Length: 340
Ligand code: AMP
Ligand code: MG
Image 1 (cartoon, rainbow, N blue to C red):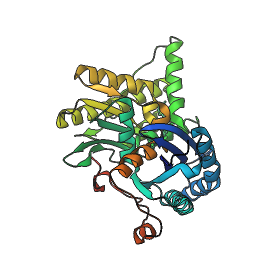
Image 2: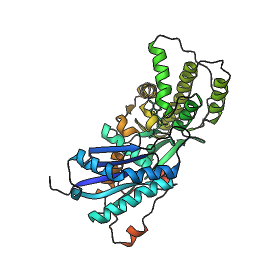
Image 3: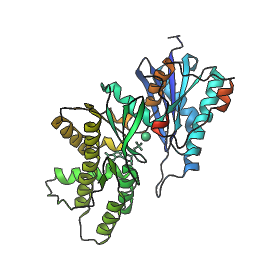
Image 4: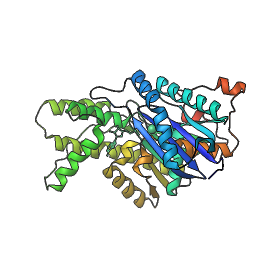
């Protein structure tokens, strides 16, 4: 393989640093390393240091997995935003350095739209996306020339909400899989789980979690409730809110496909509820493999390739290259879509 035909993608919006490699819509490498903490949340400058430390190693691993030489890269896509500024800076610096070294252009990619577009490898063509990750909770669809946010969280991201409760219960991080396991273990051991009513907060297609968070903490601290019951009730309530908002977006847009994205979509109960809702509306549900749900660079390379083919490329040595910057607060509907 000597052809210069590969798009490399770089992801660094938050805890994950990843390198993905794509060739004609096919993912041939998706390597990542995530910064983690024992206690407390993510410290942006520490995460950025992590990204700088692992970048060379992850690059070499990705090239090895893909079985290509870096001279075969024809463009480098990178997550421009939204995300934590120090983390995004670590990514763009690495991208610029590599682009100069290889003499290839850069392609800026919006992280949220990349989550949406990677859904098309599972067959979705024009879906509504439920993007449920640590920091983000949004319902996005393409309409009238832009990717638009139809609904979102008014306070915290759903993953962070679950993680915060899990941390409060002493379960460690990330809490989502731990809460899920408590519920699954209780179910498979035949334990009868009790549904406890929790604040269900949805306005139109927007959701909020802080009321439920306060309530859950109080209930846990009161020691009157079993953790399994609280975990079960949390999942049922939170996921019902997300599915209700997604259903409204499907009804509003008239679209017939739902694609799941974000780490919380690894949850089997959420997938099951999405499937039931879609079946009842004659819609199709798509859920990419877990490696494409959580933050990853394959999706950056994947959308990068589509953008590159449409003519988006910023070459080293140009003014545009020097001026190219991160966009930590980039909104999905700010992105000019020239590739569809
Ligand atoms: P992301 O921000 O997209 O990388 O996803 C990370 C988030 O996904 C964290 O908040 C995790 O707790 C959450 N998560 C991962 N697996 C699961 C699961 N099985 N159930 C619920 N949440 C999960
Ligand atoms: Mg993400």
